[in-house]
Amino acid sequence: MILIVSNSIRDLQQTTKLAKMTDKYTALDYYKLDDLLTEEERMIRDMVRSWVDEKVIPIIGKAVDEGRFPKELITEMAELGLYGATLPEKYGGAGVSQIAYGLMLQELERGDSGIRSFASVQSSLAMFAIYRFGSEEQKMKYLPKLAAGEMIGCFGLTGPNHGSDPGGMNTSAKKDADGYILNGAKMWITNGTFADIAIVWAKLDGVIRGFIVEAGTPGYSAPEMKKKWSLRASVTSELVFDDCRIPADSLLPEAKGLSAPLTCLNQARYGIAWGVVGAAMACFDEANQYAQTRTQFDKPLASFQMIQEKLAVMATEITKAQLLVYRLGQLKQEGKLTHQMVSMAKYNNCREALNVARQARDILGAAGITYEFHSGRHMLNLESVYTYEGTDSIHKLLVGADLTGIEAFR
Image (cartoon, rainbow, N blue to C red; front, side):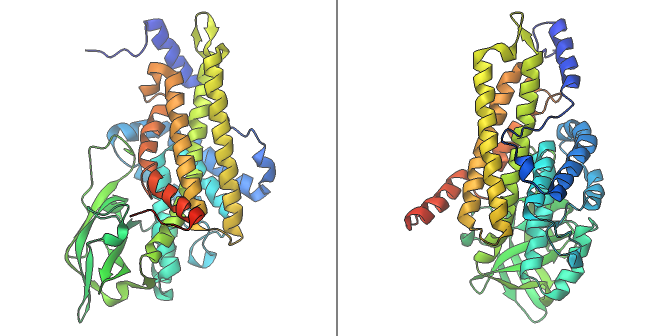
């Protein structure tokens, strides 16, 4: 049985032609935000944008179809300086501005959420945890190799039974004469199966502490989680610890209490708020080009009022999201950021990016479910991004508690 996603052979040929016509990406900048960027920020953004056009877009459909992360991109991403870009050069970073880092992730997610997720976990979770809470010896041992892509990191906080309530984790650490013994499990861990190190959070004497666990340690395994219809170009794993013995110097000395992993998550959420804007921009551009080229009733789709209304709303929400993260980046650079500000940007931008992707898929019609176009893939990915690193509801409650002074989690 052959699935035909258009009304005729002529329509199918037109769809194929349109796929080629939409190769040239035009970024939406309705409020001229480019004028506010520094020359270096624009150059960094454009460098990553060109790389995504050349290296990610041509292969991402095949990677999604095969359900694999394109590991061939890891070294090139390191050469572009995408890992730990805001960290000092001493540790392999580039010391770029927070806005420049956000723009990097925006362009990566324009390619695919799985590509941006890989870079986010490497930078904002694994590397940042070591940079913020590790000893100088740990920083020098791991950060330069992580920045160079010679090592891959992952971050194990979420447990099988505790997602939005990470403080209830069951993973435990027990001190012995030679170091620590870990027992428990983590779920939904990006990069886990092929990571060289895992930043693992466990309760030691009732207090949440962070540990660096190296791959190959007896008692540690990281089976990959398959059968996903979202983030298919990303490795998602379990982390399992069965009397896993790690040395004493595996402990992150400055990480004490739940605030430590949440500080890392705040870094990642900042990047997500930027990243999803890129996915939304990709979907808008694709839908706008398609609507201007696709003809129905002897007129382009873009000439119909309903289509124009959709495009106008999509452009408005993207512009609002762009303004939100730009100001967020300024505040982060100035040291004035609060985690509630990040929560507002994360939940708003994820929600609106998902809405934009859905509208774009609708404008594309049946073509929107094919790999020749990108909006359907972004739509499925954003269903996950909307949920991970704190659900929409949890982030709204964080903002609500900040506004009222009353916590409503329980």
